[in-house]
Length: 254
Image (cartoon, rainbow, N blue to C red; front, side):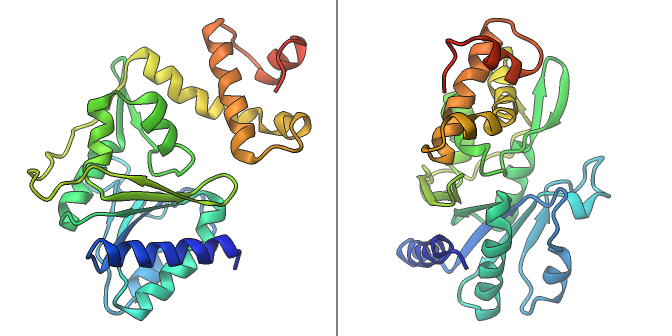
């Protein structure tokens, strides 16, 4: 196992104990995943609470592709061992988010289902906040303060492995004295927010070019440079192949 994975698992165990919890919640992106999650859940003893964010939605039948919320007890050695397997297989594919939350599982599940629904300009879609490459940018660059609080207010901490496979911990704002959150119907984005969100996938397209031009930089640094250029292209009204946009302008340097 990658040493950083072991470090992350140790951190999770320590943080759970420090928080006075005995469980950790994980969000798994199953879309086109080569690791079968559902059979492991079905065979696990004792059973783990889990919830498909597609439950009750038109996509409900796509269970094997659905984002899953699972509560893992660190007091159960089988659960803890399975968490290690998830980290080893899913973290390198950016399919695993971890959070520490004292909220009842059912409340957390309904909240995340609402937060996974996106509305913009009369259209609806899926907000893939459960992708660890997306969540930090949502929190820092896309969501307004009230929307951001809907994510932070349900957790003591969020955690993920970044693009360099290093553990990241983000403090939540959960307070035991706060009322249980009302599950949101959806996250409604303005035009500006929507384009900032779309620039994440645009930036992803430039990573190959960034690797050539920034060989000594980290993956996180390369993505930041790509995201900056994607925003610049959008602000200038450019539509088309972003690599062409970068290459044709010699002033655009990573």
